[in-house]
Image 1: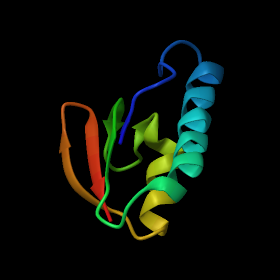
Image 2 (image 1 turned 180 degrees about the vertical axis):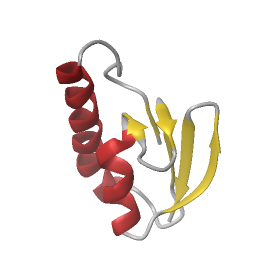
Image 3 (image 1 turned 180 degrees about the horizontal axis):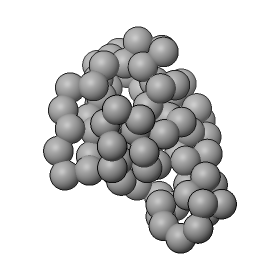
Length: 80
């Protein structure tokens, strides 16, 4: 699954909305993911705080047993 909707741009309110939108996408899609699924999240600008769209969704996924397997060019790839 590749998540790249709702541009992470503009003022802080819009950036917050982009992060919330992506978390909601993941919550809605996770029931349809297989055991060996991959999720690619775009617009991540800091891997220690996950600044960008993944600010909320990456910690959510990590707490559910997902693992980061790669980070390149502002994208984080996770597997379960």
